[in-house]
Image 1 (tube, helix red, strand yellow):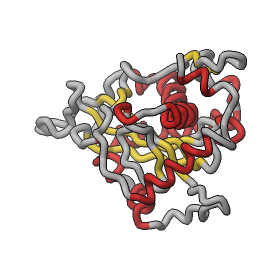
Image 2: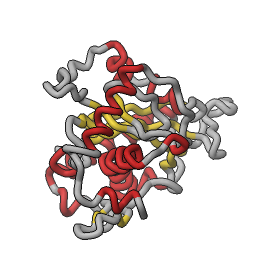
Image 3: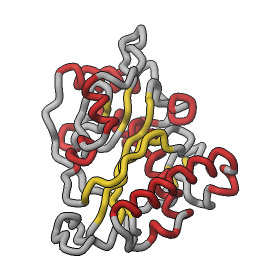
Length: 252
């Protein structure tokens, strides 16, 4: 579906994470206190091309670093151990991948953008094409917050009950978007791409509400295999997989 809708082949899901503001338990000190200046628990999720959650992890305390958030999840542990039963490389050598932003570590099975200090035109094309796929999970979080008012203000419950509330919201989101997609999805919540100019009109984002974006991470050393995989996609997006409008977009 990512290839059909967003022209990003072999993509398994878009990954992102947000902080959910909470009222901290008594005597917890700064345990849940994050760099934005509020207490939080972290929601990390993977969305498919239809704005459905295919994986959700909630409960990492707000002090944990960006890399530490995903490291706490069963998804990432199984990914590193090779236990997710991912498809093999395509005959052309393309790995099946998840996509995320610059806060995550580059892996052969997890692509992120090139650092802005290392860009040339081909890498700008790659970053643009990856961002088109990544918008899905940002919109998914935006719909979630728009539809479930409990996520728009600080949640004053015990961490265990907050976990139940947030997970229930994610389950209900999936049920409603499958069963009543048009009625459930708020007007203006999805990013809209102009069919002629391919300029994006940004839809709802949860940033600035209860669920706030986590800071971007630093560049990490990546393996040769991981870099080769990203370079393979970069070459594809600039050649056989090129879309007609991409050169104009990166020159704006």
